[in-house]
Amino acid sequence: MPSGQKTYYIQTFGCQMNEHDSEKLAGMLEEKGYLPSEERENADVIVVNTCSVRENADNRFFGQLGVIKKIKERHPDHIIAVCGCMMQQEHITDTIRKKYAWVDIIFGTMNLEEFPRLLDECLTEKKKLMSVYHRQEKVIEGLPMHRKYRYKSFVDIMNGCNNFCTYCIVPYTRGRERSRSPESIVEEIRLLAADGVKEVTLLGQNVNSYGHGADFDCDFAGLIRRIDEVEGIERIRFMTSHPKDLSDRLIEAFRDCRKLCRHIHLPVQSGSTRILSRMNRRYTKEGYLSLVEKIRSAVPEIAVTTDIIVGFPGETEEDFEETMDLVRRVRFDSAFTFLYSIRTGTPAAKYEDQIPEPEKHRRFEHLVETLNGITAEKNARYAGRTERVLVDGPSREDSNTYSGRTDTFKLVNFRSPKDLTGEMADVKITEAKTFSLFGEAVLSR
Ligand code: 5AD
Ligand code: SF4
Image 1 (spheres, rainbow, N blue to C red):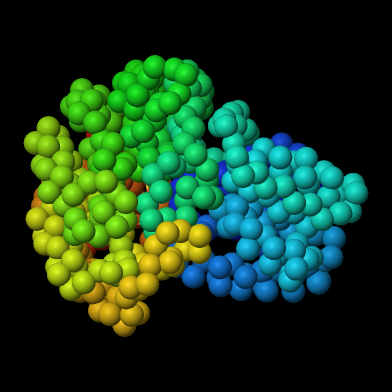
Image 2 (tube, rainbow, N blue to C red):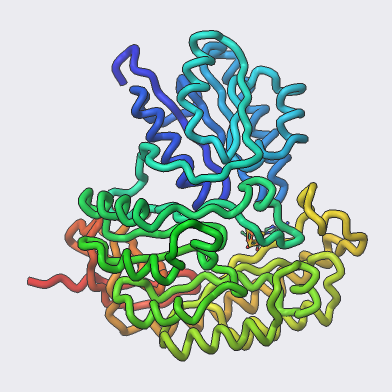
């Protein structure tokens, strides 16, 4: 690194939305002449992009700040900025300002674009700054972006959530739903394709309600059809779908759009209709089961993945058995499992019938064991097949081994004499493991 070169380091917690926000923060810093630093210790600007969804998020974040404090003591002129979902919660920003007053900049999820201005002011006026919006009517467009991958990219299509599931903090930290216009999304994807991007993942807390209440006439299925026509794009993925809003039009789009990957992440959260109602999910166990059946009969081989919360307040052994029953019936390709944990400010935090931790853990382990067995069986069916993967790059362990994903989002590690990073490659699957597949590249001569 040439002397005098300013550098940055961004630490990101949480979901793809946060990862994508960090790509924009990196883009804004690079536009100002900063370069990424390998080490946090020496970076002129350290940004911590926080998440409120993960377990023990508060403790972990303040633990990190404790470590960063030491860096600030060694380098008082380095700028420390904290942002992301946690900053949308007043008890957090109050604590930072009282107990961690050495933090230079605090900003939220709804005003990312202000970061360069806050940084300038902090550097020139040498003062601490905080700017957190609690309302945002529009999606900020056109921020620069430092993409992690050359050939695949996230694309925001909407921000925020109106669902208010009773356990979830997101509607409070990301605000109300707002959708970008289809024109601006398609234009961004055209530019990405021109820049070599082959796969886009459309991001939103609830992509199925894309366009609701907007001043344009395009729903999510319509948007996918438009993206399907963009030349150069070979794969379209999206995250996340709420079962209550999944339309027949989307299922038809799966049938018609060649580029739409056969994978749907459809969080169920619980298999008990009673718990689903307490969660304010607005569907029943039977409704979910028939939705999955409908999707599978329209799109054979589609991979279905999910999120499940164990130990929601009031969850009885019978409720948990309903979840186990749903899991066995749906046979998810894979699932993220969460122990319910209290998020201050959400309705469920005040429910009195919280489940004791040891009981939550017992149920969690039983569920994970069953889920893993199903995942392994699902993967076993891939052995012997030849699958097309988009190659992510060398896998860490071995230089002749690369990794990529099938369109059904299965992770494939494979041997290849040639570096195929960023390309679509055919891989003969020789072995199926619980969480990945293994194979050999089939190279055309
Ligand atoms: N406790 C446990 N899991 C939660 N999730 C969201 N809020 C909580 C909570 N309070 C899980 C949900 C969601 C995923 C992103 O995080 O399963 O789908
Ligand atoms: Fe949270 Fe529910 Fe919105 Fe998902 S749909 S972000 S779980 S409130």
